[in-house]
Image (cartoon, rainbow, N blue to C red; front, top):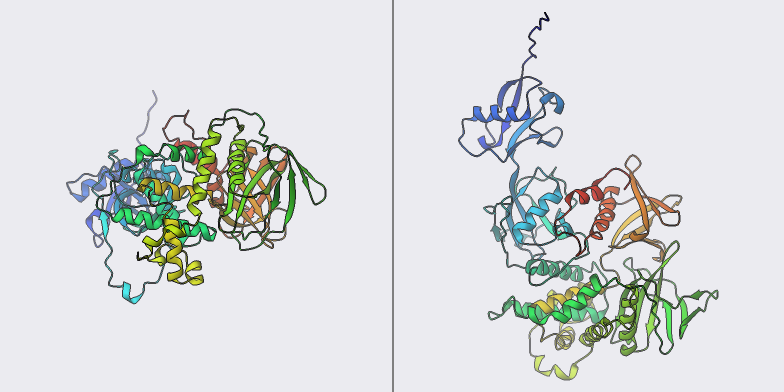
Length: 590
């Protein structure tokens, strides 16, 4: 016979603060053993409160460790909890004030126990915003309030009654518009901003994306007004005219928010060609026309530094450089990046090209003589970058779209006499640079001049046109970080775009090297020395450490953009949350 003696673990007292009892209520003390499960601890605490309510959303928060105890089947011993642990029984969903780009604040319940990404997904369900993977939460910048603002009462739209877990959708007809905010440190009723973090917008469809489009518009508008992105004077006047037009339509009582959607086929096709395009076909693209000039232009960068000149000449199908005799290929390789650099008033029609090279990408500029040449070459370059030829049916449509964009920047001084009496608040339409450079009476006629070109657009068309021009700016969607590359003794700038990494010399502001994500073989982060290492095709390796930010943020940007590139129409619309977390938060080689 085998005699087993009964063994009982020693009991000890555990204190748990119950948030529902109020801030002054003493903690509840229960007798526990180390083999007691988290779920049983919650049950014993709830029974001692003698409160009759729904406790299904409650969980234990461990203050010292700043973590939630969500695995109810785990024992206290497995969790590492001892008698000195400070535990709080609190709801997982709590009110949060969400600041939107136009100043509107909504108050809703957000999940504090899940990752930020999951919380953003739930918030986007409430606001009826598709593709929540493009957004994140941002801690607002603290601004000292002026005396006259102390008595200002902010209107807050309360949506706390909307259930996040029920899957209900709530359409918010307001113009709404990112944070590296972890759940830790964010308290109940704190204010966070909702912003687009990843500048790659998939499947924009006015029929389903009313809130998403207006949110994008507001974020883009403030990026222009706050000079977060550089643009020419003509583009600024066009942005101002579009804002003025959209504001007029929004104030009109007879404006129908869904009007004009059926007439947007041409605009949507143009936008779709820019964002995605047809990737079928790999034939060569050869443009035969009069001579053009290919050069690297001197233009202020985001660092306000000028780049050195380097001229190239293109004759027929051959391109020869005037320096060092270097030849350039006549074919634009598939995968090249094409963006405009235009000043209609100054008769400057340039095309910025990023052409794949063995060790990165070469940055070149194509100068055209007039609008006609520019529209043909710009359309041809866009098609060529996608592997298409001039015989493709979309060439004429693309060219007309470009010509339409140029016409919006063309002066219409002869037609503006009827508009000169209109009162325009130029301070709300233009960035401070132009408000200091010109007087309001000088700016008003120029805005009204550009307004003549957009006055017939519907609300949706105007918003789409604003977003299209914003995305076409040369420096659109690039986030800059101060880094130090391995083997270098000086700090440099790393630009992270949606499809490439850009190494910029801080001393002269020149682009040193560009690497595309499509050529990336593997990448990893050494979390001990906080260094990012990347390997590209052709045994090209680079590594850098971050100077002005945590390398985790850079890691999130790169992983997030790689995740965005996996989306496609041939894939399910179900969001692969596991892959997103693996790419943006993993600690192993990917």
